[in-house]
Image 1 (cartoon, rainbow, N blue to C red):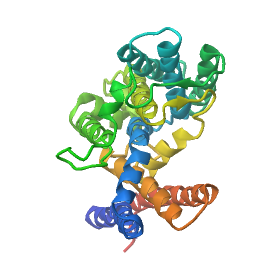
Image 2: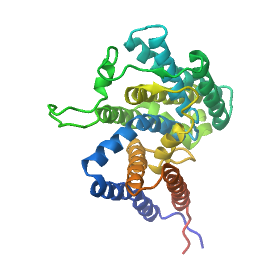
Image 3: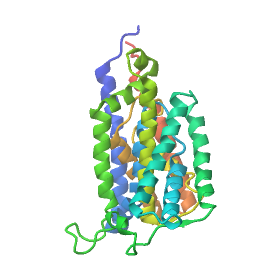
Image 4: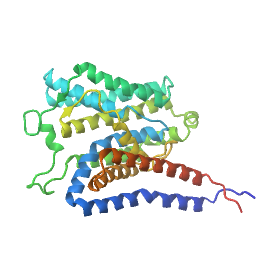
Amino acid sequence: MEVKKDYLSTRKQFDKTKLLAPAFMVVLFVIGLFQSGFTFIVNSLDASYFIGYMAIGVTFVIITAGIDLSLGTNLICAAIIGGYAYNALHLPMVWCLLIVVAIGTTLGFLNGLMVAYLKLPPFIATLGMMMIGMGLGAIVTNVTTERYPTFGSPGAEFKTIFYKTTADSPLGAGIPLGAFWLSLFFIISMVLLNKTKFGRYTYAIGSNIEAARLSGIKTRPWLTAVYTFCGFCSGLAGVMYAAVYTSIIPSTGNGFELLGIAGAVIGGTSLMGGLGTIPGTMIGVFIMSFLKQVLFGWGFQPHVQTFISGIVVILAVLLDQWRIKQSTKVRKV
């Protein structure tokens, strides 16, 4: 005979699975420390914090049961047009950086309009925007690589807030300051998701968009806002990318979005919507970053690293499906 769910037992099982990602992250961290010591920490932070912005933004989108495939190309498109504004139009650097953020935000807004108002499937809408972003940057710059000023040269003052600390810093030498700005944005995003109407409506739309609409939520403007916020995050990631890598190459960025999406999914954000956390996403981002550094320390080539990272993502999705099945399971007596 079937009876109603034993919620206490189900919740206990669900909580246990939440420990897997943090435990995996700790294991990778310990292995990395034995491999490279402090260098492992610095390299992991350098490789992860611009990806972290993308992952935070796409977490909100995935919670609504959507997806954003345009993150990576939007990042490069925004960064390369900002570089063009500096090199060709000779605008002050602060205006160029604002242009980078504005372009990312605008492309995210257009994604939101297509998904919320034109009713395009998120996969199709953002796939189209991915190609638009890839082409737009190349068109504006005439397929020319744009270079931001190198550290220490005129116009590169903005890099100092992302560069590594120096020996006379209270924090010691070699800490990527971008990681601290990411930590601040992490706190702001966590408050936004958990303590504001924007976050509550994001969860409501992902859980059941029709129920949310019937309860009085204007789902289309809020869904548009979610994609706009994701675009804003890709713009911030573009600023970070320009600060670290200097040279921005046209028609690149395709594939960056997978790193952000992978971080969110590994951290427990459900592709079915309605479930996800910012701390979980950051754990997923660091798992990807730690895994890359550990595999590199073991001598694996980049293509092997990508192969293994893909397996980790698939396992994370399978775990997500298992958790959903367990949470809805009806026990028999």
